[in-house]
Amino acid sequence: GAVEALSHRMVGFSDALDWRPLLFVEPVIAERACALCGVVCGTAVRLSCAHTLCRDCYAECVEQGRICPLDQEPFSEDDLLRLDCSASYLGKRRVACWNAPGGCDFVGPVTSLLDHFKQCSFHTVSCPQCHFPVVRSNIVRHCRGGCCSRPATDTVAKNCQSRERDSIQQARDELKEALGKVSEELISLQSGLNQCREDIRATRATGTSCQHLLEGQALRLNALNALCTSSFTEERRTVEKVAADVAAMKLSSSLTNIDVSMLRSAQSTQSNQLIAATEEVSYNLVRFCGPKTFHWYVSDWAAMKATAHQGRTASSESPEWNAFGYNVCSFVQLVKNDNRGLDFNCYFKIYAGSSDSELGWPFSKTVVFKIIHPKDKSKDIFHKMDADNYRENDSFHRPTGTSNVGIGIASFCTAGKLHGEGFIRDNKLHMLLQVKP
Image 1 (tube, one colour):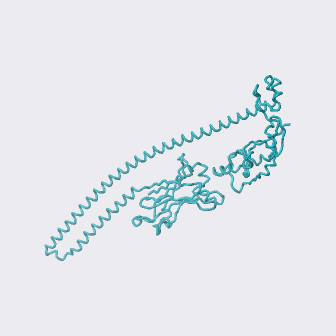
Image 2 (tube, one colour):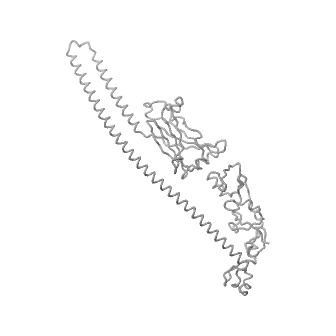
Image 3 (spheres, one colour):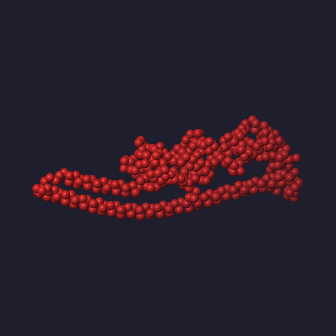
């Protein structure tokens, strides 16, 4: 009877047999073949869900979040069973001849397949009259026996025709799958273009808003200039009046006991107060116009994950920027937790600045951390931190060195959540830091 065989390809065992479909007759090979690509290779792993993956497919699954693509079950490193398959072991496995559909009943070890195939008498050829596949040793009888009148009864022809039909169907299915993937990519590309267009519109709207804000600030600056000019004019008049009074007192013998130096001191005090008030108004205006929101990107996300999986803390810090006169930044960390997952932590840090002596301490603003989703704003993850609730914490006091120790949110979320919900794009993570009054 016909031998039941399973077709699998080998990789990394033999230059002559690698990537050629072999008809294995031993079910044990099916247990070592990759459940995704069907390839048998030297090293494979069996997941906790009982599916076997080759080295390449396993590496891709790890990159995509450690989830089995066949049943969507998660897996960890401790749940894996390593399956090693040596060349000598595979060489002893029994296979059927490639000409088995044509009637060859050879079954032997893989190492003897090529030698047999060279001498096999069941190779098929195409009949020059009816164009059906025929065993080469039967081609003379086939043609002399009136092949055109009985092609349907030729068992070899039926088998070969069935194989060709299966091959065509397989190629059709593969083409359909490829077209489906292309369609999905086109839909994704269209979504990206739509998002880009919306971002451009939002940027234009923001630019218009900023222009209006700048125009308003220009009007305030003009008003401030007028106020300062008016104040200095009034002060000059006061000085002239005091000088006239001093001159009059010098001429008047009744005022000889008045301390002229006291008047000069009063004049100096008023001038200093006016200058200090002007400088304070100017400084507050600069603080009001300063930025309050800062976007930045955590780059080389894959390298950070690799570092964290090794048990080391992986960090990334934003550039310094000025918010209400304070020099601040944000930094994030990936840390391996007790469940063998990765926690994503987010922190806020104050750097020493040239204007620190003129600022209010401790820092008392509200800090907002936000992770921006590249496609769906409704999925954004954020957390607020009111510095007023931590006034005794040294992180919000005036820096005594280059910077303070960071303060923020430990276990903000997990790396698995960021991967699973699509926050990582082009190996980067979009972050936002906002400082509110």
